[in-house]
Length: 252
Image 1 (cartoon, rainbow, N blue to C red):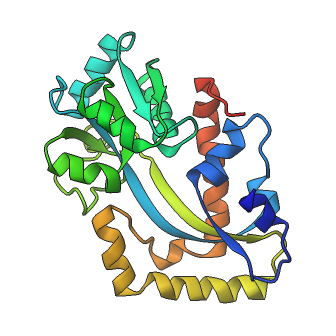
Image 2: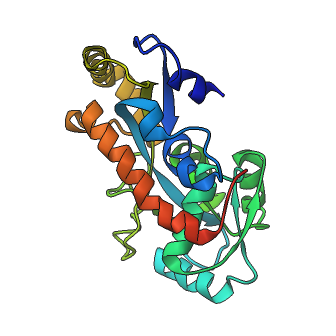
């Protein structure tokens, strides 16, 4: 496995890996036997990108707002389904956490990727997906699906007309994040040098212009440091372990 290989590589800064919620946070609870310990087996370098999820439904779904969506799901949880790109994927776990927040038990339909899941959502064969902004935006703007909420702390510039869940009264926020991890025990001077280089790259206007239309945002400088990233990842593992355990979902 790539992640385990990087964690065990020579700690000279020559190898690093791009990790995310799934690989370095949710994996610690989802897997019965995680292949690595995120906080012990890696040196966190920095948070690079964040993006909210979007709760999308078929265009003829009988709800247009989050409150209407919640009421419908609670009343019909035994006969509706949510889709994902596969067990343990961001779209899967995001909806697990949403369902836990709502106190509902809705059947999960896993697909091999978001493409076929989206096709069945458009056709009305499944009722909702907790999708990424980048893949849902064309379908929303094309009128093929409806968005009832985004899940960030603020509206995403990529979909400015879609209110957040928190704006609509649900205290639920979840961001898909990506960050860089180095080998375990990488010396502090190397970590600092690479952190500064990463931060300079993230400040390039051309990079931001490429990310923002996709709903992906670069965190401010004070949230890119190795120290912040270590605390952030530890907090993410702790924050979501309870809801994931409560869902009963595990990955072999």
